Image (cartoon, rainbow, N blue to C red):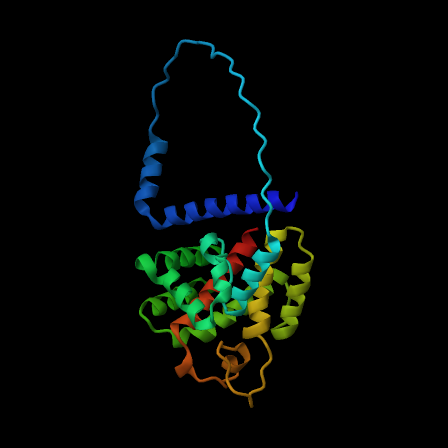
Length: 263
């Protein structure tokens, strides 16, 4: 499969996935689909007729060149700011070249707006994806996390979401390692993949986790702008500095994991 065909397949699956998630969030659409499926129409014998044969002119379609270099540049820029691409995310929004010229706080504002607008529609899509794809052992804990987030109580759920993310990496790699050694094993698995877009998506998540969240950071140094796994789990961070943005980045990452697992 050449890269062009691979990307087309990616967008096709992506659109199908969004339709399925949207239907899952809309009971009325599900009911209408069920009604349509249950209706049996009487069979009617129509008279046979032959269509006249028409010769259509041959059209040469122009091959679209996919600029993977630009895609990777945008993905890496967004990822290093804590936002990774998910299976239900609007691709046009995520791969907007204008994001390359924005500072971290402006990118954060755009993504928070993306998840919170239209009565949290995109957040609810991510929530549906995560709960339907996550290991059963995390289900109840995640439901608690979402309830607290929706009640605007963010701080208490951040350590748990980081724990779940590390568990997801362990599941993908089938590894008993932890921390930076677990990430190294995951990197080797990513490099062995064949599908171009899957490599880009996995690498975007790896880039965020290894370059920011899981990156070793001496406790004697000043705190960075992004939350750090070691600082939080070893009790060195200040919870008063944890925000909605931090939580949404973790939820976003968990949704990306479900996308990778579904491929």
